Image (cartoon, rainbow, N blue to C red; front, side):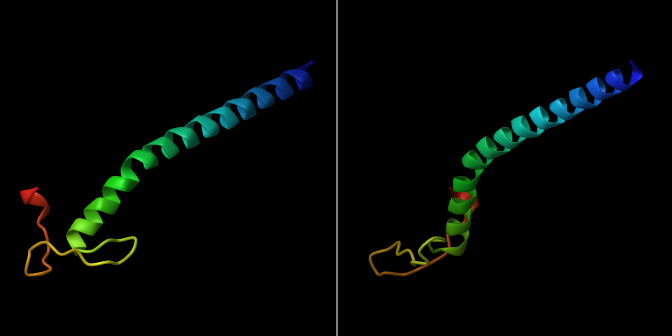
Length: 73
């Protein structure tokens, strides 16, 4: 009887661990989907070029490249 009770308790803890890990993974994935595009945009603005394609941004008619300050946006 004690053996069965121990097995049931271990299975319950294992099931709780697996479900918690699964839910945590989904929450983390959804949070990353929201944050990563913002961080990439911030990096692009700080560096003055596209992080993905490494292309420089031209902002004026004279084709001058300069860094944008995030505080002014």
